[in-house]
Structures are given as structure tokens and as C-alpha cells.
Image (cartoon, rainbow over the protein chains, first blue to last red):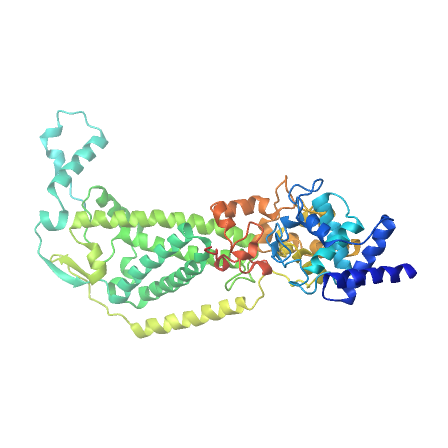
Length: 139
Length: 412
């Protein structure tokens, strides 16, 4: 319980620092990743939007050849819409563009599970997920 | 009626050659052709004009020419989405054929079927005369022409009836959508096509026959079918002319239209036989629709859907895995409504999948055949968005019908 409170507090500080819109459901999701990150890496010292941006735009190895990067399907920037390989339009990933992003924990889990496997060929770490979310929330 | 003995046989020029029946005939023909047309130029007969074809018969003839031409062009050459025009040509042809039969009873003298119904003996005699290019003059249709008209009417009736069965059986459209299943429609499609080839041969013979007759008689039959008038030798006495009975004809036409119309209407109240009611499954709609168009379950057989659902972790090169509970629900939905459950054209065709890619609709033999004249550039158009986007062109894709008339390829 103490851990969770701490996590929430950390998240709150982080979020206010980057000036994102507050949303309790989204905050809880980020807080969950904070807790996981701490469990995975004792030296964890918070998420970084900068690392998230690098992660989002990088060409990854280990995934399926059709999808080398997040930007293969999502737009080149968080503000531009993307397209699935089957041609369906994907709304921009930035919270400022698509307000209801990252508010349904099941959906967040589902898409990290699928897309990390497609792009990196493995599960993402809590830190990678948190960095990514922090980047998107800040934009 | 009697055939004049070919007087050329008394000509001495052939006596010092060896004769075969063939060489005699061709010698004879060349002689005839030298001498020119039979009735007018050779004998210099006096002629008088006779009104042979009444206006309704002439309108019938040229309307039929137009509708058959439209039917052939839209059937063989035009892209699928001209199907609507093809259908109207067909319905128009039905009306014309029925009209001609009714007018064959109540029309004016030479339009009546009885005036050109000949005995086999007369037909054979006429063909023999044709062989020697010396046919007897008929004011109306001659026996060969009459045979052609009956043949054309029979074939056209067969083409329209089989066409209605194709429409109802394969396309689930028209009055027989409920009465004819796919198998019936598929058989009717073969008949429809075979009869159409016979029709084209008949049309060719009809045209050759008309121009042969024009050459032999000197009578411009094409003009006669426009102004209705033939120039008949004075020696030939026309029969007593019976006038048309338009009222009787109209009454019969209307009665027939009402009878046939209500019969077809009764059939058309049956729900289309190929389509079933499908329960809406929200998981299916949401999960599949997240990444791509929601394909109609009738587009793959059950086995393919089951394979596809078991391999979602590598779904066309992507991880599309689902929560187990959701996967079970969607698999059940697809198994219930796979192609085996439908009798539409698409469902019947897509039961045959590609052995190499059994879960890919666009790899099925039928899909490839139907899209092989559509260039890659067309698929790349912005409004199309790739081969996986059925409803970009098939505006009724969501219903699983895939009507020909509902195809519209975006221009850009």
C-alpha cells in the first residue's frame, strides 16, 4: 500500500512536470507501470519522455519484418494519424490529439502485448512502456 | 413451286469435261451470278408496292435488335457493374417476345404466325430452290425466314428464363431470388451462355439469309423492315389482307402481364434463398475491426476460420492475439457463419481456398480470377487502399451479397 502511494505520488509529480491533462484512469495505468518498473529494476529513477520519443521512432530489431518500428503503423509523429497494414486509419497517439488514449487498462495491455511482440519480438519492459506513455501524454 | 430444270445442262460447253456433282453446281452458280438477280432484273417483271410489315412489327424488330445488342455487349464486354443495364435489356426482351407472339395472333396479315407457318414439305422445297438460287417469291416471310423467327423466339425465351434463374440463384436478386438456389442458378448460367452462343450463330445466319434474299430477289428487305413496304411482282396475287386487332392484342398483353406479373410477384415475396439472418457479435466486430475491415464470415469456410483463429499470434505478419475468452467467442461466431452456412455466390465460390494460403481471401482462386483485370495501380489508389479493403469498391460487402451492380471502383 505504501508502495502504491509512493508510485502514485511519483507519477503525479512526473505528470505535473510535463503538464499533461490529468485523468484518473490514465494516472492509475502509469502508476502501475511505475510499480512494475521499480520491481524490475531497483535503480529505476522515473520515466522519461525523451527516452519514450527515441523508443517510438527507433528502428527495432528482433520483430516481424513487416513492422520494424512503432511508426510503421502509427504516424511518423505522435500528432499524425497512422494506418494499419490492412489500411485502417489509426488516430494520432498523442493524448492532446486523441483525448481518450491510455484510459482503458485492458486495451493498453492488449496493444503493448501485441505490438511489442510484432515490433521487438519480445515483451516490452515496464520502463519502455512507461517512457512511451510519458512521451505520448506529454504531447 | 416447281423447280425449273437447270437449262445450263443443255449447254454444250461442259460436255468435254469430266463432271462431278460439285463442279456442275459451281458451274451453274457462276452462270446464275453472271445473269444477276432473279425476279426483277432477269425477268423485268412489273411490281407494285404492298404494305407488308405493320408499324408495331417494325418497332418490335428494331427494338429487339437494340435490346439484344445491349444484352450482348453488357453480358460479354462491359464490366460487372453494368449488370443493371443487362437486366433491363432482358426484361425488355421478355416484353418484346410476348408482344410478338400476341401480335402473331392479332397483328395485320403478314405479322400473323399462321401466314408463315409452313409444312416440312414446303420448307424442304424452299431450301431446294435456294440451293439453285431460284427461290419462289413470298410476300411475307419465306419458309427459311419463318424458321429463323421461330428459332429466335424460342432461343430468346430460353435466354430470358435462364437469365432470371441465374439472377435468382446466383445473385439472390429478382423475382426468383427465393425460389432458385445457387446450384440451379449455376446450371442456368451455363444454359444462359450456351443459348447466347446459339443466338449469335442464328443472328449471323439471319443476316446472311437476308442479304442472300436481297441479292436473289432484288428486294431491299432492310428497307422493307423500315418503311414496311415490299415491291411485289404483279403476277403474284396478295391474299386478302386482314387488319390488325389492336384492342384484342392490348387486352391479351395486359392480361398476360398481370398474370405473369402476379406470379413473379408471388415468387418475389419469398426471402432470398442464399442469405441467412446473422446475429450481431460485438466482440467479433470490435476485435477484427480494430485493425481491418470486418470481413463477412461467408467469405471463408469454417476450417479456414478455425485455422486463422488458432494462429492469431502471427496474423499476416503481425501479433493479433486475443484474450482466450474473446477468442473462443469469435471462433464460435465464425464457425457458425462460415461459407458453408450461406448459399450466396460469394459463399459458394469462397469455399474453395488456396492450399498455400487457406486463410487468405484474396488468395482464393475465385478472388484472383475475378480481380485479374484490375491493375496494381488501381489497388494502390487512395480511395481503394489495397486488396484487403473489399468495401472500397463493393459497397454492399458488409452484407456478404457482393452484387455486381454495387461495384464502384474509386477513381483516385
